[in-house]
Length: 339
Image 1: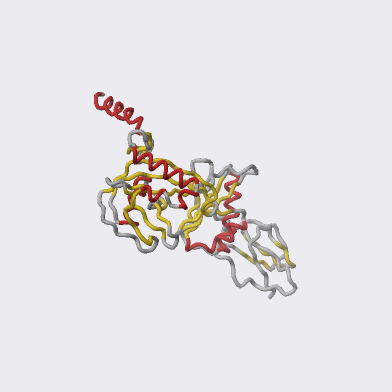
Image 2: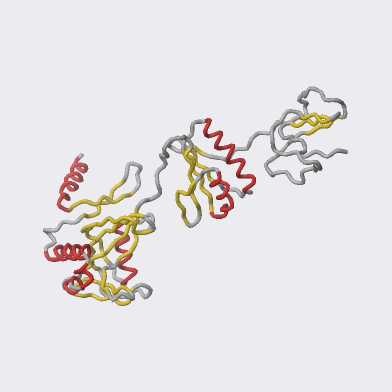
């Protein structure tokens, strides 16, 4: 008995001597001189119907047993910008995923889709290579997933870039004696403001209060944003926004953080500003002068105060604006109450 080898290619019936191999979707003649039966079919091939006849070659006529194999597409949802989003939730072998992805891209192209987003949870990292080979590139990563993107049209890609900035704060806290609360940066011998990075989903004012509490144990109340600085290529090629914030203390007993802070104390602001590092570095010197002016004459230096409000979608948000314009908010509130 002659052995035949079947692989996943769509063909018409193949005639071999007096035998006719009929396949609904996948059939290929043996290519080597010693053909063998495939010992394993990919998991995504199903319902292949094969019949063998000992008679001469005849015209192929589909029978009731001939089952048409449907191409399997990746599950996706449309986004708001003419693209699709794929969330891979079930385990897949990369040998199964690769042809499904190829067929899906062809399908989305015919539909006129533009951008494709594939979210791969960390447990499905085995699929990354297959996606990259199809032209996908990294967009961003989080602790539990990787996002890959693909632009279908033969035009310049219009997919939005990953987040471009990191946001940090520096907290200027002054007590009634004109002393600023400083921490000594561990190993640097430099007294500095409490500083830190705003966490995901955290407001600037909340971050400033949290950082002061973490580094010194002092409870505070947020007052103003006095200034902010933007710099580029600061953190893994990301830009950086740094907000200088003023806070008022609500407690005074210091309990310093041991991991990052060598020491923490209340000190006259003039002593902080007189440090060689502060005087020699332009930006630090400017920040010190702004804080000094604020502490000497609060009424003449109006910072940006937070106003709790809501976005068009109903989310809570903070609007920061100059206290010189606070009367506009007061008038608006009165008009709403009267209306």
